[in-house]
Amino acid sequence: MDDRTGQLPPPPEPAPAEPVRVQSEASLRAQKKVNQQTAIVAAIVGVVIVVLLIAAVIFLASDAARTALIRDIVLILTAFGMLVMSVIIGVLLVVLIYRVQELISFLRGEVVPMLNNVQTTLNTVRGTTTFVSDNVAKPTIKVASFVAGVQQMARSANSKVKSRTGQ
Image (cartoon, rainbow, N blue to C red; front, top):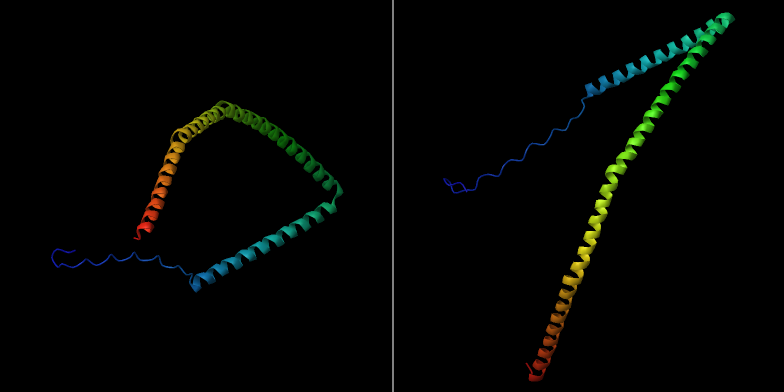
């Protein structure tokens, strides 16, 4: 309450909601124009590639000796590239085997002892649970059952006394 006027202060105004962003018609037109330009450029690039391939086939078909020379160069470069890739793959396999060996060593050194600790903890919890069940829960249940039986017997005896006296 406000001490001067004796009235409650007005509730706080809720925070203004985020304005919903709607793309304007102009931005949609601009985006559509960009998409059309991209499609046109892609079509032009495709046509240029097809023309270059046709020109290469015509160029290679016109001179058999030059075609054989280019074929031999391409085969040599391909074989060299495969040799380099094989060496790289072999080195990567050796590195991978080394890393797997490190992982196995880590698992044996760190994870197995942790699992043993967890197993020990679980056995301790199991023992504690058994102890509490045998020494706390079962006696408490027996006492509660006995008390409930006595209460029921008292109610039953009380109702028989009331029925005999007529109350």
